[in-house]
Length: 560
Image (cartoon, rainbow, N blue to C red; front, side, top):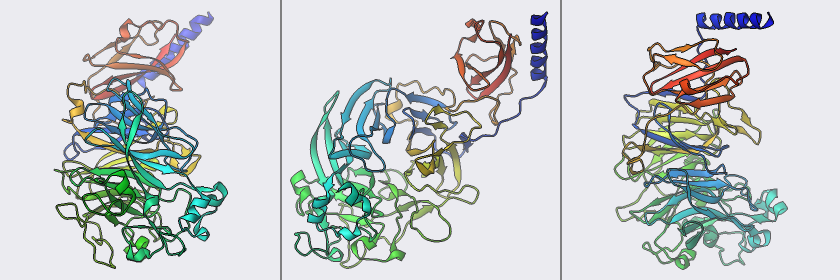
């Protein structure tokens, strides 16, 4: 009698579910906008900052590929190479810390998620961080911090009254340098070139030091006073590195100075330490700098254009604005009543041979940007740190407002044509409808933060011969979700209640299935559901998600 009552109750519940429509759930992550007429056709690569997987999605937000073999969260950038391999940095939490953007390891995985190369570059005296770049010859340039003791800082002419307390308490500073590595497969590599900030300092504090001089008269050198603020241990805080093969030059985004620096890569390591040599005859001195002329005495606050920016990159040849430089301008210290970030583009004052012009006593030109995207009232944009921007072949710009995991694609006219919010936190893919939690270690970030993203054309060499069939969404679903592409085809799941097998009608043959409970715990996923026996499942309420190429349907089912 008791079993009969239970069956009747379950049948009543099932009947009510079948006759009551499922309410659409509020969308909190994943795809929000896909303007198919104006968005650039391609695949977007991103690595959630708090998780170990890397995802490649199409414009519909569907996963085309993913890499899950790495044991490390990104540290911080990831790239898809032309051969289909994934090149990613790793956060290892080594002996030396920058206080932001830690790395220490580089990994390369093939398309099938097999580790083909790795390099550990972290000790008690140096550590790779933030960003790397693959050169045309296969070598890799990367950002590295190096330990300089308190005594070494004083010997270099720094004014200790300008130090933040951490330099004295830690007994060190960690300035940046650049290393070029020739990989040795499957592990390790050889350092073939270096450039050090420390070799190009100037200061007017201690006349007994060899680098004593006038920063205003030496814009090619780096003032120990920076931009006048008290200096942290992670003084330069470089966060991106880019390479221009036409000029054989390297661009460095220097957050600590709110500048981009351009240096000559044609030098030898010995020449890079000095002030002569290389194609430009200036050794390792700065060829060009832009964003904050306060740092070399050629301007005031009103002349500053970068405000602790990230990701300064050259626009690639063949794309609108080729040769210009783009960045995500985070906006710290910008001033005014409204705090906001921008994506900015400017045209460097360089000739066809890679030489930069400067009038003595003046700031490097141009004076201002050629294009700026600020966000809108409906879609404001602010990220205190991380983030990036990248010019696409059709002239659109894809950007990542990293601290909140927001991805946007905007046209030259600043129209938003694609919007996506990273649906992955420290535990993996999130349930649609859930809100990303705040990062307890960084009050301005959420746990779905992303350092930077890239979008690759449909005909990118990495995709040749690959199966690019779109799969499921990255995020999970527990109920039906607003979706303009929902298929009107009538799919039925039966029997309901079920005891063993579940059958469906109205299918088109490309379906995948996920069965999970009310808490989102998955019990089974696959393609051949009719052959699966669910007899061992505990009786209760379950959800069956049916995914087709252009639709998602979710059914509430009762297990007897």
